Image 1 (tube, rainbow, N blue to C red):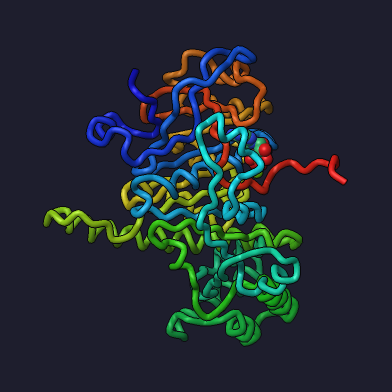
Image 2 (tube, rainbow, N blue to C red):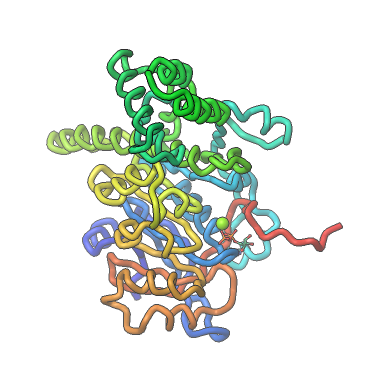
Length: 420
Ligand SMILES: Nc1ncnc2c1ncn2[C@@H]1O[C@H](COP(=O)(O)OP(=O)(O)O)[C@@H](O)[C@H]1O
Ligand SMILES: [Mg+2]
């Protein structure tokens, strides 16, 4: 029996076998309560992918994202990879702890609980909040406000670029870009707004938005994002701190926007150098292949409307294969994810879905090689956590899967009220 390796091309399978893969779960044979686990399912970590992780609430999406991160960290090619988790709920810090509470379950799988050397990053201006609540973190990050276009600010503030405020914003940013060396702070933007001859109301409206943005605690002279692409490292970008703010998702999207743009640019440059090295027979990779795992991805790349992260992420989806960036997008509702992202997924892990529009949107991708409609496969899944379907465009196969238990602690579980 050939081993099941999803995401891996026939050529890679012949040349590399299972090198650069990770075991994410086991193939499930049989239907419903008669289903049992069989062979391991290997997942390709060596090539760039766009992967969707779907399923309704509590079916294991965040958990599975963690499993993928664990495999990226422990694989035989980890040194050539770097993994970033965008963590809107602040749940992945617990990967630093071993999953001791599931030790008996892990034993059935011949796996030992294990702590991961994850680096948790929070916005620089949020350290006090974290310290007060005794929430652990390792380091902070900042964004340079001059790296954003007027359109991106506009999207973050929910401004129509044709409105008075939108027009003023456009003028201020282009003036600053002309008149400075390309580096300016939010204070400069605020001063700039006041210098223009616009109605007071418009000016103050825009000033208020930038003052609110200063409270986000992410802006500084320099962006400090390069540390996220350190070779072999797992970086957790905790953007949960903006939770209570109405603009919360806007700030998170700005973080992802800047990160996605920067990494893609760096990888494109690195790829060029690697190509030259290859011509001269030097086998080295300049910069690790970057995997970005985004939880609650529909908030960043929605089907309806646009966030600052929309275009940068769509570029990853569209051209990421060439420079070598991978994207894993987890969402409750695939129908709410941008259709271009959905259609570009080459691997999908779908836990249980019930809403018709979500099942339909899933059925639209990769339908050519399915023998039944997608609903049939979903209905055949046993009612156990961590089960799902893998749709693999590379091998044109569909596999029912039981995702493996986590080595590290998962903090995102459903709370209960049983304990005193
Ligand atoms: N593969 C798995 N093996 C064992 N338990 C799992 C598995 N996947 C999920 N679970 C359980 O289900 C709970 C909910 O999973 P979670 O990933 O937080 O849901 P969501 O889909 O809402 O992100 C987890 O806390 C965990 O206890
Ligand atoms: Mg979740």
